Length: 217
Image (cartoon, rainbow, N blue to C red; front, side, top):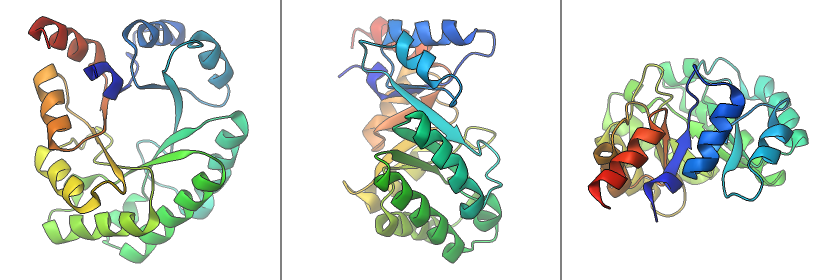
């Protein structure tokens, strides 16, 4: 399996939306991102490929509560999305309010399962400085069962190999791990996959794939 199939490709702000989609088609990335207004167009441009058209809610702020974000999930579900990245409420993360984190994660996961969507919940793991707190969030994920637990938004928090290893250790095969933030080379991407990541968020997707080709992998 090529490295391209792990990459959730983030658009280059210098590209038009169609240029972004064309690059995803050419390189065969795992997914791209759209909103309800552009979802159908993205699906049409990527028809015949395996590229997923995903959405992102409350990104990168993480300002919404469960009750505030569920209407947004409903809007994306009605548009046809099958995969959504969202950021946990960062006030709850900052305050280590694990009850609120579980309430939100469980509520979103249940909604997404009921609507045939995969949820990728962004924690901002670097904020949780202690290993105990990081394990606690992973244990909540084991109960809530989102499709993915994601290290970070990349704005500004970045993925670390230690966090991915810890997440993969606790989550096992029950919840997949997505690493995002600061992954710019093939060597870095390969290391995160070896550490346990099943998906990688990257603006440098093309450079990563070209690096794999240059390495002859």
